[in-house]
Amino acid sequence: MNNRIVVGAHYGLKDWLAQRATAAVMSFYSVFIVAILLVLKPADFEIWRSIFANGPVKFFTFLFALSLFYHAWIGIRDLWMDYVKPVSVRLTLHVLTILLLAGYSGWIAAILWRL
Amino acid sequence: MTTRAVQFRIYRYDPDKDERPYMQDISAEVDSNDRKLLDALTRLKARDETISYRRSCREGVCGSDAMNINGKNGLACLTELDSLKEPIVLKPLPGLPVIRDLVVDMTQFFRQYHSIKPYLVNNDPPPERERLQTPEEREELNGLYECILCACCSTSCPSFWWNPDKFVGPAGLLAAYRFLADTRDQATNERLDNLEDPYRLFRCHTIMNCVDVCPKGLNPTRAIGNIRDMLAARAV
Image (cartoon, rainbow over all chains, first blue to last red; front, side, top):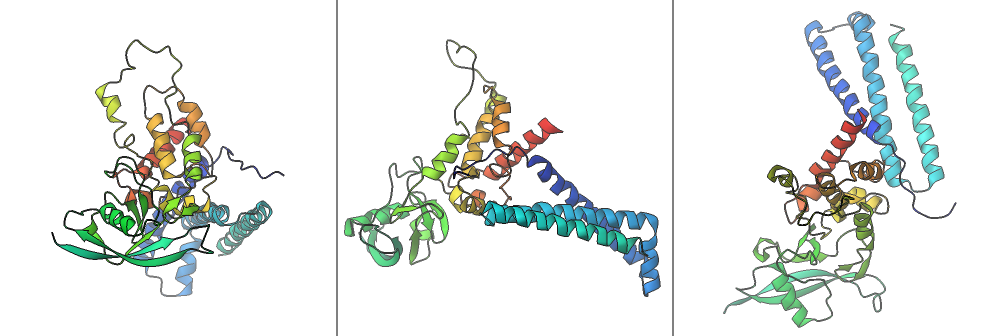
């Protein structure tokens, strides 16, 4: 490959919008979950379990986790793009980040649906 | 007339003589008519003519004397001498290659500026007089056209420091929006295509150093937000 500087990948808008949308989901969830905890005041494990075993709470929690991971993907990818210059290293880090976040998504699903 | 000494700590580097840059402590005698930092620099230059910096209009119009003043980018000709804590630490604009002392190589900065095609694109035959706008349409250009390209904003932007070759930077993006906002321009789509890029536009992380330092009080962050809104309006 030659050393010419190439730009013009024609993406970025969707990620920028997604970062805002996922941020909104996370803020709504934070208010929602704090409200639930304030109302129910869980004192033991059984109450904690029953809160998150509830269908809508489970769904919303999973949505929160997915939003968090997508948000983190865009942020961490920006970090690699800013500071890691060799393309091969950057690509490797991108792939590892995606694998890690995909793994986390499966993990949180397993935790939530085990309750 | 009463005179007083002003203490400076100035970044010095002459690539022909110096192995590496160093900071020089030096003072200048100023009198009560010397109101701006540039006045004191002129006194300093009279004392040591090897001190190099750019200057031209001395009234904040040409944008030549941008430098890092006590850690913050600004124009020497607009900075009140009395507002500065001594010793006044002067460094070249951060992130650009130093040619000598406070003089930087602005090639990278202007390359980004040129990349956004900073001129009106209109393929209609020119009218006999000027292309007219309504007062409301003209109003949209306020806060955009006043940029003097001093580079204070772009060289205070961390995203520009890390990717000066790929990120257009606040000054270039402000100029890009100046033509996107212009009702006489016909290249809106091409301009948006040119900017829709993870590096060229989306390196802006809304740090807002640009707004903090602009000597003309402009707001590149808002312009960048408006470009993003236009892209969203086009895509959604």
